[in-house]
Image (cartoon, rainbow, N blue to C red):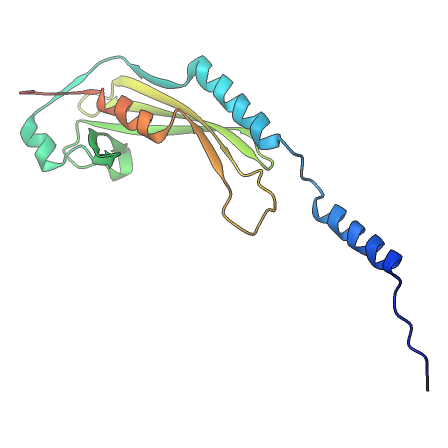
Length: 168
């Protein structure tokens, strides 16, 4: 009868250590924190809303929904839609310009929404935000985390500022 040999505890430890180290390949602790800090700095420089002109909208048009409305944290905001999805009678729509700052994991980008008055094509405002997506460990097992600056709540409130509702 042949004698069975089993791997030594040292061999098992070495294999487990190599597997553990290779599973962490590419993971750099703090890279999310680093890129979140970069996003905050970029956001402080030019992030947020710039309103060049406010648009008057009647209460009836608000109720008809010609400009989209969104509920965030129990508050209703008036917004705008991208041109292709805007209501046919919308007073304002936006165009989106996206710039990739970092393509690798985590990805970082800058998005500028340019708000345009429908009747004459004039730019009435712009909103700039920055975002980070990914950089999680372990990757591929769950949805990637993300970080936005300014937040979506701040964006909704700022976009709402484009409009003056007549009768209020």
